[in-house]
Amino acid sequence: MADTPSSKHCEGISSVIRNTQAKAQAVRPKHQRACHRGQNLVELVLTLPFVVVMLFFIIELGRAWMVYEGAKMAARDGAYTASIYHNAKTGQTQLDNKLSAAGLTVKTATVSQVPNQHAYQADVTVTFSPFFGSLSIPTISGPISIIPSQFDVTYKAITDVSVY
Image 1 (cartoon, rainbow, N blue to C red):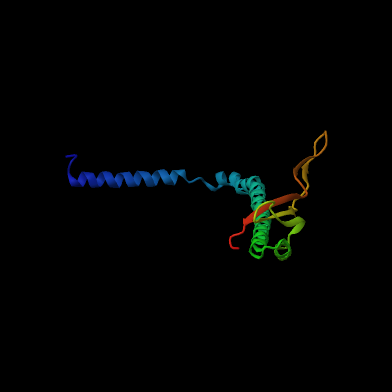
Image 2: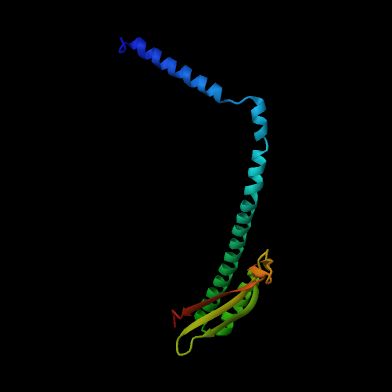
């Protein structure tokens, strides 16, 4: 009798009814839910500072990468121009133009010929200043610097002369 189709149908319906009753019992009355009303606010207060710090870190990392790429492209272009025209002054002019167009704070920028070779090198050092520079933690023995107020980004490009 347990194998008849009608008994299988009844077992399926009874399991649906039991699940529905269990879900109905799981719903708490209104007076029990009131004590959990501020839980979302507490979770937001605990997690939001970490999310904001991560966001600012990603922004600062992107800015530092932009400064590095600007210095790299200017150095490569200056060395390449010097190697094409066989003239370090032309490469220096191109390097200065690229750095000023990128809006970088230049510490040093030079283009010179590599000694005893037909190659030119460009050395670029630019200064990067983070938005949240000189961030430090106060301690008894003095502040501990987490982020410096500024730091140098250096790139060296060497280009060999390809055509004489």
